[in-house]
Length: 305
Image (cartoon, rainbow, N blue to C red; front, side):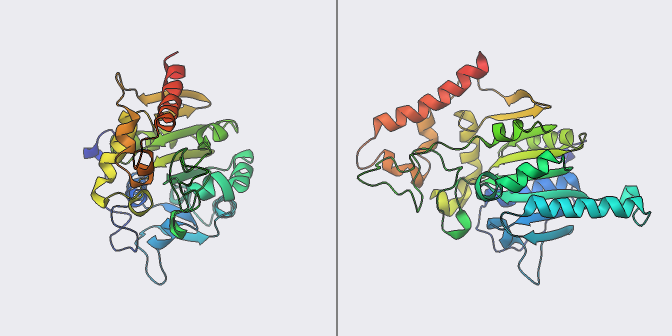
C-alpha cells in the first residue's frame, strides 16, 4: 500500500533515456504509474507522444510493452487480456504470474479517434487500466486541436484570428462523465503535482475488476509554450485555481480528493502559458477571460451544492 511518497518503490520500471521532450508531464505520470503497479504489467501504447518512449530497437520499459495504432489500443488490450486468461485457464501461466493490462494514450485518442474502441471495451467490462496523459492537443504532430483542447486556447489549427480572436471556440469534452455514463467501477483524475493522491487512487483502483480510468493533467512544454521546469508549478496552479479538479468515481459515486477553501483566479494559470497569451496581448479579452472563469466557478458551485 502506497500512502505517501516515502512508500513509492525505489526500483524503476521505466528507466531513463527516451526521445521525449524535456519536462514532459506525461513521462512523469507513466513513470509513477509503472512504479506503483510494478513490473508485472503489459503496457499497450496508442500512437502519440508516448510512442517516443520506445523506439526500436531500444525501450526504457522493464515490463512488457506493445505499440498499436491510435484508434486500436482498447481492442489490443482486449486481445492480450483474453490470451492471458486462456493461458491461466489451461495452466500454462500461474495465477500469481498474471499481468495487469494498461493502456497508455493521449487525449486525442481518448476523446476522439479511439473513443469508439474504448466504449466497446467498457461495454464488455474489460479488466484494464486506462491512463490518459491529457496535454489538450495532438502534441506529437505539432499540437493541433483535439476534443480536449480548452476554450480560449491557441493551437496550430485554432490560432487566434480576426474571426476567432479567442482561439479555440469549443469547450473541452468531459471525458470523466463520458466514462461515467458507461458505469465502470473506477474513474479518477490525477496530477503530476499531487503524486501521493495519484498513488492512493492507483491502489484503490486495483481493488476492482473491470475498466479503470485515470485522466492525468499533462502540461506540454512545446505545445503550451512553457519552460520545461514549469510543468509541476503549472500543474499545481491548475488544481489551486480549480481548472483541474482532483476527483474519483467509485461505481458512479463522485468524490473530490482536493477542494480549495479559496481558489486562486484562473487568470494566474492562464498567464503562465504562451497558448493563452493572446487573451492578454495586444489587448485584454475581458469577456473571454470572464467566460473561462465563469465556467470554473459554475463547476465548483455545483460541487459545493
